[in-house]
Amino acid sequence: MLDANGQSAWNRLLEAEQLALALSANTPAAAKYNSLLVGVRVIGYFILDFKKHNRNISFAERAHRKLVQHVHSCWAGTSAEDECLKKVIDLGTLLQNHLIRACMLRVLLSPYPV
Image (cartoon, rainbow, N blue to C red; front, side, top):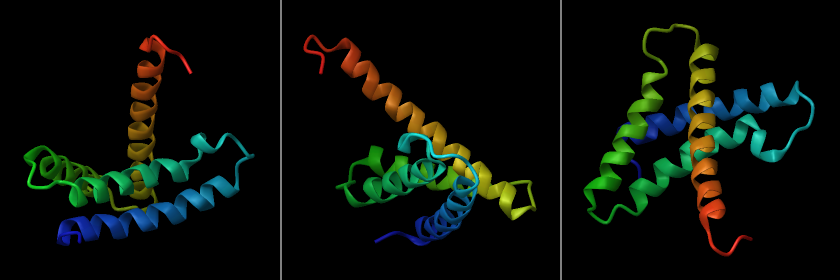
């Protein structure tokens, strides 16, 4: 289903997941949404979702390409693999926080709070 660039980004996400699991094992248990693994999986979900549901909508295809490009850019100018994978984890955490913020804003502005 993924193109060549998407598949190579997916493979890198799998490596980042392994590092996130290793880093999380060394930290005390926290809320699940604070897990480093969640951020990486948010990227993976969006890469798949934008590709799967694009239905020839240019926005979805552009979003897919841009996100794949962001994942690959984590390897630009750095030779240490763990450092690159940590950049992917940071990117995922950033996207996760933006997603949570957008959802929280919707709940806060709703006339019918949950």
